[in-house]
Image (tube, rainbow, N blue to C red):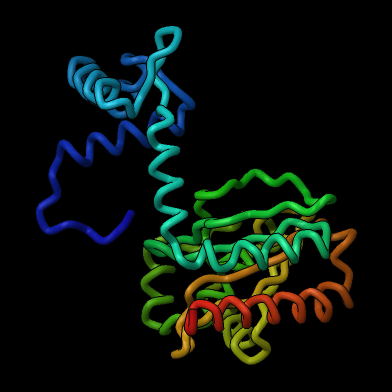
Length: 254
């Protein structure tokens, strides 16, 4: 959840609760949705009818689903993002060179959001797509961003979102995480060694503005069998650092 509004409009909150529930349930009928959200069926029907009228939901076989109008909004948001437009050619180049999955992540409301993902010829198929949100503390991409945020902001994020363990390798102790962030700032590279997904390793670097504030992060992810020491700790960090430098320069001077 984002920053709390001083006077939230209840109907808008309900609308987005319905939208999120439709996504979570992969479509639902009025009764199922009313039960899920503990709302009167008549109210849920009115909301859904209005969303259908405005073409944000569609009804198929007695169930309501999110409509393609959301896809158009997502495309608009991404394509107006200067970072996406600047970074995508670098992601494509890295994916072609490594044959792995290459990712671009930004922080929004204390979570990581995948802005772009490019798959090389041997890339693993992980359950996360563009727009997917992840915790920052258990991903290489997220830690690369956290390392360059002010400590008070890091604490705010951890207070709000916690440090849930996604795998047995996840860091769940705040002080251990902060020691890791110190190392990342010193070495300018972050790692995810099966911390979010078992069997998957990731190496990531930050993308910084001229004042060393994080704009986003860039990573290569692959199975542990292909992410051996020299590749993981030398070749891929050098490749990512070079790409991040190009992105930073283009964002600053273009």
